[in-house]
Image (cartoon, rainbow, N blue to C red; front, side, top):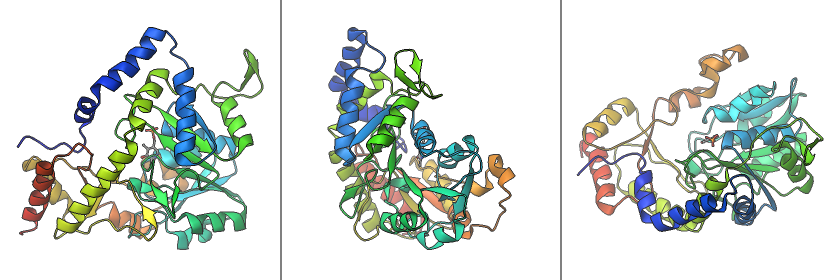
Length: 366
Ligand SMILES: *Cc1c(COP(=O)(O)O)cnc(C)c1O
């Protein structure tokens, strides 16, 4: 069997080629490349999908987080609490606005922010919490919302890996004050380039973000605020709209594949699913002490895998100015040496799934 890649965007394209080609062609032949109907329709469809009332398309998931923080008034002197274990962008945007990221260690069970430790990180400067639904597994939002209410903090959900995931029956993005979505090509609802979206229940927040992402413009050439150029590209919006119809089916297939892996893999720690959580498995991530050897073995046996992420936030060189040190977040540090993500996209065939299982189990001597 040929190499099983960690993600196969070509296979997905082949499965819906006609609709994608028509979507792209529709925009190109309309001549309208900036904003317009496709962006507006996707905004209302994603607002409805998540259960938040409003949505604003932006240039990327990173910009979604940046504009969300900006809309919460975050700036120099403020502190924002987030997880020590995520993609860099989650904390990068905090620093970019001149605020201080305050990291919290993770729960080894679901790799998400450890809610039992959040309050220890809260100070008089704290303004917001950014929980990340890592790998598509919802963070413990009830506890996070209760802590935020008690300390008057905003909650910005990083849903970049979790569109469609449910926590106690609610879709992520609709639980906190603001939800941030990424359409980066490898996410479970990926565009063919960069793209992102912000969702919120609050009309004022929506109005503010809507201005911020278009140069702070109130009417054409009248700028009320200093903002950003962060629009969702119209071709990307059309592509994402064509794919959105399949998202629930694809997420269900991801869960099915995850169930097969979890039932069959031996010698590794499989991802736990917490009560009342319905993950979307943007990644299926196992843990093993022999991570690097297993990854080499899988590669030699033509099975792709990836490490999300090898370095926790507080040990990133870019954050050396924050004076964190090795040992500060033992769980995130240990887990960063153990995690390995396996192929989990909906287009995987049964034969490919068998191959992945067989390769992992053979490495473990089964
Ligand atoms: C992908 C990702 C982002 C950033 O999204 P982009 O669209 O790539 O800018 C932020 N947070 C997490 C957890 C991500 O996985």
